[in-house]
Length: 488
Image 1 (spheres, rainbow, N blue to C red):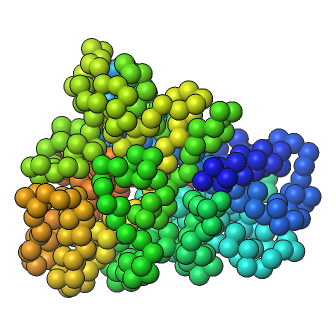
Image 2: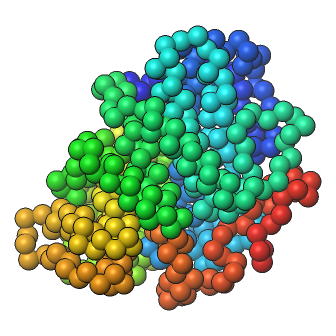
């Protein structure tokens, strides 16, 4: 992992010399004199330029503050946290009082489109390089996966979004929105291409790069999101039947350093706290314990509703939620009460031990796609496809891992009634994947986001809040080509 991160840091320097984007994808300007014509000429250039796309995954605007706001905090799994008046833009997200000027939307829009820009550059220029053909196809596959990942987030947040597949010329910067169906078509094709060209694993120096299983697993989620249960079943089962993945034995250790890049990992953002920086993220810091020990900012507080969602004795609750008075996982200290924070609790899955470079240099890998998620995708798809008994196998595998050696906890689910089993699978997804930035997207695709949000007192308006507003800056820059989502 550290080898890959060193490569990514060097790659980022090279790409910044090559080209860069401004705060939005419509205003790209060069930063240096090195041109793409002279850069994309060697095999090493192809590797370095691909690594710059990976480096975007640790970016503040991709997987940090705003991202946590419009995945966890907006949902019923979490509240804003921190002190009452800190980061009011997240209070607006939490309460559904936001408008198109909220900085969270512009932040992720900018970050994810910069990732798309870099992937597009590579997908279009790497084919021209005289290099090892198998490596060329693999690198293009990695870039296609990452482009699909960026677009998959954007289309679920905003609906119709500009579909950009090539680096733009200056006269092309003003773009209209593309129907979501066309965006999904590109996502699917990118993931199919990636699955066909990527290996099942990598040598130690390249652990963390995209694999065939990651592409198949993400494709199963894409199909599930669209209600294509046959496709979801096909690709989830491809992952399961590959034999390349297994549930990590101890759920409570899965999110600690020993659980990184485990047998359960399909796709996780690589991070490391080097003495000189360059490999960490602020994902851990913004969610860390606020106070003594001072590990973070205290945002993304697990909600009262999430606390109540766990079955009695479910060990996953204690592995997910920190309270004052608890000993940190490494035994180094006890969480002290912070009188400035109301109803204190913190996301334990984001905890990291003491590390070099300060709190902003977080070394914790960000888990994006786990084998447990794929098992539950398979269970849901199989149930919808009339195969309830098979669905129970994968649902109960997840529950068995959670209960560990205590057979008195989390008994196997036995119902084969489709509607009842659907509810059990949805509930299992919530507690298994809690505080991992999954809940909002699940509620959205299940068609019950408004009902659930109102049940926890949020000001959700049907016909409006299913999608977030297009950032106002993008509406303005488009010169009238980009139309706002309804009721904003």
